[in-house]
Image (cartoon, rainbow, N blue to C red; front, side, top):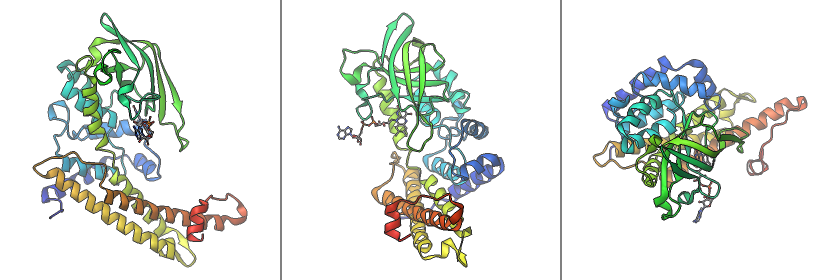
Length: 366
Ligand SMILES: Cc1cc2nc3c(=O)[nH]c(=O)nc-3n(C[C@H](O)[C@H](O)[C@H](O)COP(=O)(O)OP(=O)(O)OC[C@H]3O[C@@H](n4cnc5c(N)ncnc54)[C@H](O)[C@@H]3O)c2cc1C
């Protein structure tokens, strides 16, 4: 089976690479290269540049501001963004809500929201999960009762990524408490500036603030903000989750991190040579090479599948891909651990000890 990109796809990759090279602001590239996540303003600034080309929403129809790219071209674009590295288009707007509006929304909703989603004039977040309703999402309890032209919303969402940056949320709410659980849910667009909304931060294990709790206390939401039919929100949710869960493999990100780890190891001195040359570094490099090959193969296979006549959703990675990613990540970790070990010894009396996990130390005698 030929897993190579076609000549057109290779030309498209070159076009994307040149565009990014020319237009990506250097400060954003530097911040991401140093391992920081993009700030809100980085994503907004860059997405607006992409949007001039239709690449903020690459798979959307042109009439809604997209570029009508096929799956293979879309993957190439994502790969190149990761590689740069550059922020990806804001996922809640582009991958999740946009397609839901095109499939279930009214023409007025499409006209009003889609251009704003593409240009990040509005930042949406995803209000699905609740305490006790994660995997069993259909058990959600945030309630919306109808009063004239409004729903009155009461309840709580949790793990809401970037709610503290967001202007709006798309939320699943229970509009019929008597119906079977999947049949009493509706999909609402809620302005987060509405009275009665409280957003509280959750600090995650990395010490960062990405996640939030969002509380709704008698929040009035116009009925015009209902997407699809009342009590049919589960259809929107299933469609949205299908798009969300097929786009989270992050192969390109993994490859960029590995390339970066290799570059650091190549310029880090060790004794008379470089970190990359030492025994552990060499073992790590073999792992890196394996990992990179596996990812290359995985990407080519995905391109091939996506370009084929039977377009299938792209999974989050076959078991062998995950195995290779784990091996590659392990190799990168070894390099980092070795680097930290060296730095600790170089700093010596100056203090600033760097912690290496005891298990790694035992396993690799460092
Ligand atoms: C980084 C991050 C960002 C997120 N961002 C958002 C967001 O923006 N918006 C949003 O709505 N949600 C968000 N989530 C929530 C996410 O979608 C939920 O975490 C997910 O749905 C799982 O729910 P839970 O955490 O409540 O786990 P649970 O449902 O409590 O599951 C815990 C464990 O039990 C297992 N389990 C559950 N049920 C069963 C069963 N019946 N049989 C066997 N095993 C079972 C699960 O596999 C899991 O391992 C985010 C989560 C994370 C980690």
